[in-house]
Length: 413
Image 1 (cartoon, rainbow, N blue to C red):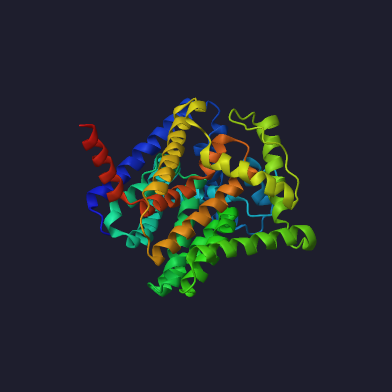
Image 2: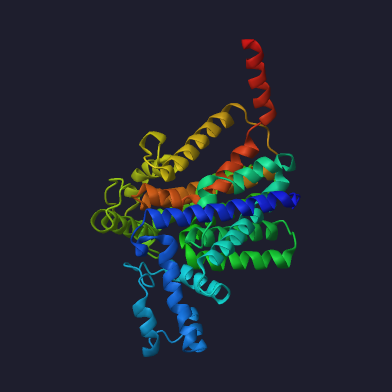
């Protein structure tokens, strides 16, 4: 992987420190344990793990969803607070996935949360380095800049330092991207297929909307890779337009797959929960959404704005809000720099950049459309950070930028 061992040790040490900070935050500022994400899924996993005291078969059934209506299993289900979600949208319950992940680790940790944090550190580092491994060949000269853009973005680094949903999402996403691109480019073909299948399996069980965001990007990448004579940007734009028209036709005439209906229900239920039940402090009054194409089209600019730029630095009132606000500011600065100091990209770089861009915009659109709470937006958009920052690392002509800075410094002397 071309990284010195001391860098890997340093990253892992920072992960452990980050997990300790998260533990301190959740124990200091969340007096009700059941409201703390780091504990609520962990405590439910303890209930599954306790089934081993009575029967190994009970543990296997709970982990594999076998014989779920059996009376002997109900005593475990009844004790868990987050096994069932308040609202079922007909998709995989991601609460159960993270609970099961913690219950599996308990076979080694025996209920010690710090062992779970160490596992999370390994999983997170593996995920980010897998992304680094697939991105680095596009410009090896920028390997350390790419490493920083993928691994060391503070929000992503922090929220994947414990066994939370974000950690599992990044694992599934990294496996998918590594496997998908490797399969197309015929690198270690059988191993690539294994990574791809594992990635799809994980994402289907933890955040299915990430799979939805990957579809247009994956189609565009595949077509652009196969049709070498076609302009990369045109391939992605046409692919996106076809998919959008297909969704509009489905929503207006066919009603075969209730895509927009699910997004509208998710948003409207999230608003009700944030306002009337959770009393979320960072709630954004975005209003309810109708399940028709025109409502979504009108809402798209505001949705992308919320997902990309909130919170702003002037409305951040805590350290956990200031850090993502600074990240948003850095992204904005990088975007401006890319407009003035871009470099000529070869076709393979264009393809991977468009893949990252389309995935990021699609995921940000989904987040912005459905999420009315800034705190949730910050965590939901963690998967896009490695891709957005890598885009700018690859696009910006750093030599031209530094030369311009030195030239201006020379003029001022």
